[in-house]
Length: 137
Image (tube, rainbow, N blue to C red; front, side, top):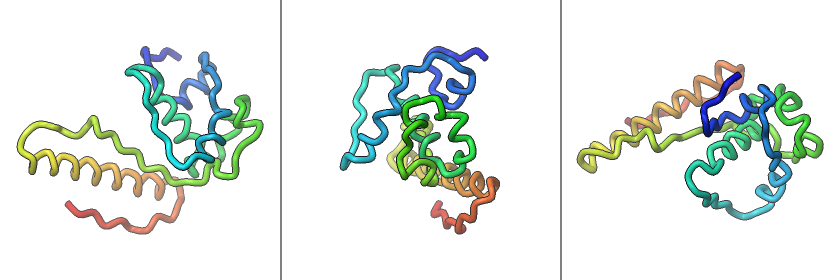
């Protein structure tokens, strides 16, 4: 499997057995800290880190835990919070920052609403009981 430079799909990288420097041993430190701030230069792994955390914490990926993390440090010593959360991803780079303040605001709302709808449908499709989320346009 080929990956584009800077691929940030953790599961794809791991399952394709690509080179990965294991930093999963830092997850307990993240869980033990009050807040996190990831300041790194562009193209320095922030998105890959978030993808790794998404795969670790997403309740819908529980059955894949050993396949994804079994050979990594956290797979040998997982925390109680592994596969514990529903994950809502937001990509603010998709929000159109041009136009009037009201147009930008609507672009932001539209993006958030689409992501919430996808979140709700995705987890329902995987068999989870998600309450209906009322969206304010």
